[in-house]
Image (cartoon, rainbow, N blue to C red):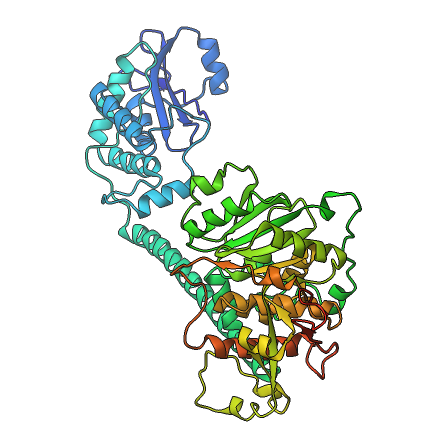
Length: 567
């Protein structure tokens, strides 16, 4: 806004308002303008001389106006016209303005935001807040100028003697101007209140999450208590423990729950699965793939690789390497035969020997332990028998189960070892025990075979991982035993109770067992645990006498065939 004030002045000793001084009219022009950023008002005062009386008459509405001296006019508007600054004061004011607003000259179109100003004042360590400082200081300077009339008169005389236009800015004075302390205190309180509100919200959120997890935990415990207990005595905590200790992987459990005992495929679906047939005149009828399970027995493994790689019927040897802390030696990983493939597993479990990571080139699979050797001719004889019955297992080491009618009462003994499986849920039924080789040969009957030396179809490896009951799968992973019993009973269940086949008797007796101090399983409770494995696994897979497909037995030796055997 601009306001032009034109006042006619007379000489000092003239008493009439119509007299002119030297025939000329002096005009005092005052420009009051507001800065673009709205931070203050500036006044420009200058004295002009004009020789044209016609203009004066036109401006005064016919020349009838009262004479007012420039000093009096400027003093009357002294409340809005602060005194001008000297050059030193102007430089100090500009320097102060640059210190307060360092980015104003760089980007004048984007003034400092109110949020940044509030934050700087709330976190400032000085005693002088800078909120709207220019308006505050301009008002204080104008008030000070109004109280100093003599100083204003001197400035008016200086402006009347100057011929050019001079711009003056309000004097801010040398005294520091302070905002009321209550404003800075309020701003600081708001900042701290916002901080504490955010902190309290985070605490409440964390408490809600904790209570929700606690509620879910107790609800799962209630559901598990109301559901039938597991035959193996496993709890959801055992499933979580198996996951944490990397005994099983997340892919081994259904995606809906990490503690579900439901397999990925039911036994009924597995029984309806059709095995891939052996194509005549293909590699499946002439060659087989060996899968060797090993654990910290590199010397025995290397001897086994050197021996079996020379067999003509071996197409490939896959080493199941579950030692995640150590790499296989170079002589094993880069075996000179070119037949060895190391299959590295991230999970340390006996179930991994049946989990295929590298697709074998043949459908016939020979499952071996790293400390078992047999002549190539014995392996070829077992393979020929398997090609005639690809849906069955053909083993070299067979065992039997022993039915104990009176053992049900001993299973309910409260002093029994808690680490041993409990079959108290069906204690009124017959109990099956594990029969060692001596019992098998004495009775001349067998019902299962050990996968430490057995031929089986490649599809059974996938069915073991997918359709085996999860309680059995997790128990094998946690206790590192009974995977051979689980695989033998699973194949018998899928073949409707048929027992595995046995290789020729001479081939069975041709085994060489390598000595090793490292043992994967064993201990003083080994026999008791295997007894419970046979009993519970047979119950869960439905191969007991009252099951869906009762397990049949076969003869170890036939009287009419000295080298024969089978079902």
